[in-house]
Length: 484
Image (cartoon, rainbow, N blue to C red; front, side, top):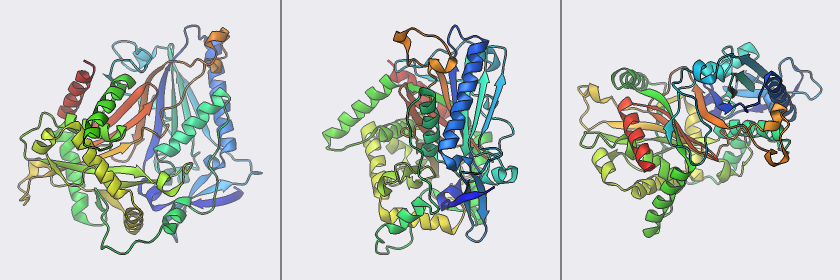
């Protein structure tokens, strides 16, 4: 391949280089969508994918390991080169309805800002992601695989669309740029591809920050070295205990815009009484924590965790596509379950806001990036509750991992009816196929556990995560109460 330039990635990209991301959508087919309309949709999606990769050269690149620097880079092809596989577009046809194929008891109905809050059906990954697609950067390099993959499955009554990319290339915002680019192409809108550079813009921006005076070692909140045996053993034991003992499981919830808006506004109003400001992300994080632990009051357990914040605003990198997030503690200090129950939603949201603002500084960013460059890390865990005999003198601390992806754009794909080649009256021009479900699928060598993430679009909030079955029951109970 003739290489136009090679763009280096950063330590934060390397930290997630073994994982893959897939943004999955389930759309309702229009009532009069026949075989010709399905074929037109496939052709239009394929053409839109081709135009996205033609305009965004990075997506046509291939990962290459820089052995001397111990980091990944993307070789971007020369404009005159003819790539073998500039993208991967695959499709499949299922003759039954989505209801039958997905094993549902009843058909899904299109989501709206006032749809009932609900637990979404478990997704079948094969509907959104081709089986042969690699997961890790190493897998992409070995297979010479395309960085952007679009997989479409048509059913008798629905169509699923999945956009996949290696997590080492994109965080949620980066994948969201690809989702929005595909949507723009389908609608005939103008969009701007991120600029190419042989230097890593994140590293350059971090290095250009004013160097703060040294204040001792900088912690990596919620993460610890993977080069020591102890932390790795704790991580693996905790994983087994959460999965086997507590039945940690994956679920996907939808909270409609009307309910979320009411919850956020009431929390903001309560915080404003104390002259405090909290965001929608603060509110939903606090709501999830209080909901998940509402039935555990009195247990000898404290909670905290590691969330991530984006560096894009701090570093003026609005259109930066690669991973640009750093960890920070969910709360300034671990919170006992009794105290958690006593805090109002606004008080807990404000604690989260304080922790975030304390971490959103040049000193924190430089220190954490340096730590990530020095060693591989794993999530930090205490010995789990059932193993209290292992010399622990203090109550255990349960550590969550969370990510607020609500502004990322990953859930913003829309299929205009024009993409089906249907002849609609003028009043219906610009209408889109109804969205039946949305899924953020994280593909990893080890399954998610004790984690939650939020995505959003105009319909509402999508809560995706993996936690104890008992905690999901508590969250679902609280979700139902929000609608009363």
